[in-house]
Amino acid sequence: MRRWIRRGGMVAFALTLLYPLTGLFSRVGPWRWDAEVANPTVASIRVSLIWTSAAMLIVVLAGTPVAMYVARTAPKERLWWQSICILSILLPPLALGILLSMAFGPSGWIGRWLDHAGIRMSNSALAFVVTQVYVSIGYYILGAIAAFGSIPPMLEKQAALLGQPPWRVFWRVSFPLARLGLAVAFSVAWVRALGEFGAVVVTAYYPSGMPVQLWVNLQSFGLPAVMPLLLVFLVTALPLPWVAHLLAQRPHA
Amino acid sequence: MLDARILKRRRDFTVDVHLKIEPAGSLGLFGASATGKSTVLSCIAGIEQPDGGLIRFGGLQLFPPPLPLHLRPIGYLTQEPNLFPHLTVEHNIAFGLGRHPTAKQNGWLADLRQSLGLANVWSAPAARISGGQARRVALARMLARRPSLVLLDEPFTGLDRQLVRELIEGLLVWKNNIGFTMIVVDHQAHILERLSPHVAVLERGQVIQQGTWEEVHAAPATDLLKKLLDPL
Image 1 (cartoon, rainbow over the protein chains, first blue to last red):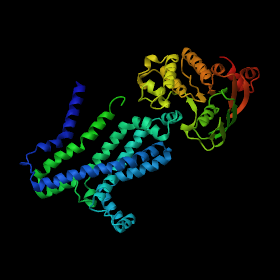
Image 2 (cartoon, rainbow over the protein chains, first blue to last red):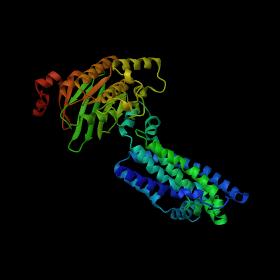
Image 3 (cartoon, rainbow over the protein chains, first blue to last red):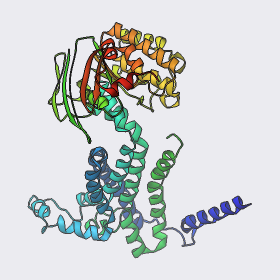
Image 4 (tube, helix red, strand yellow):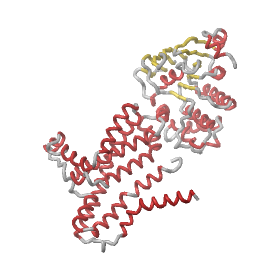
């Protein structure tokens, strides 16, 4: 009996958690999809998917070796590097956006140099990608550190003693054993970058990604113009982390 | 020939040993727990870096500077089998042979499968086999690469006598076949005596006696060694 009461409590909690999704079925009138709404909306989907993918490529290429290094370094040193990664996560997105626009703007150290070179670091695809990298890489690295940290170092050393050079040890031992943890880390970073609004709205209002376009549609046309993009946003953002998380939770995964 | 001078600071003492072993020879490292035996093997294998010294094997200088692990012709077996849990038994054993083993290597693998009694677990995931089977697989994996130098760090701890006997017999057969140099660490004298006629005894990181087992039994250098050699 008690078990059923507990289970009933869990069902009630789950329903409360999922309740916001019922907003998709709210009566907001017929959804708007005329040219005025559809053109910028489709463009925002394209911007988000292409440039977030580019940002994720940078996150993985830069974040994986960093995570590997931090996971295998001495505990004291690891703490320092981890605290820096956590700092990038803890910054409020809007504050991060303002800091990025100042650091990479004409008055910043690197920004000044970029400005001389004619590289625009605000309202450009580059600004969009750089901002997404900054908001998401900390999530990926921390997840990847945990994934690599769960592999006994002796397995990698044993693989090396069996004649495998470092890159083959990575591909044949480290990566296969960490892959589910890396998938979860990647998916969290993906959803974080794709859904980023606060920082991106400061650094790259144009080209607008999906979150900014959602805001624009809401402000300009109201809820009927928001619903189609909202649906697309949920379909592109949610499945990857959801499946990765479920796979990682499997017994003996 | 192995010529290893190893200096390594531990918390309570400094390991300072000098070992020389002829090609295809063997040596047992004997002593009480925590006397630096495993440290010596670990430094030769490259798992730990010595603080000083010189390690040469054949024409290779292993230290200094430390030679990368993958370039060392060393087989290293410890108490933990350290099998790759995402691979099958077969793929674990063939791990060091590259993606496409030659016909000769495949014949070699078949011999190992047969002699170590691994046929019934050959295709099983390494994560699903028993502890005793895992030790056999670890031994087969080490031998499959035909190492020139084999380092065994108490690989028989916790195994039943029958399995220990089988593994020792297997190891000696393969030692004759391959002709590798071998160093074995154990704190059980009867196991070391089976594997090597020569022994070096360590206390607090120093070699206090070296010679054949007969010599050590006849005149143990310290009271502690005498106690260690006494049967229970």
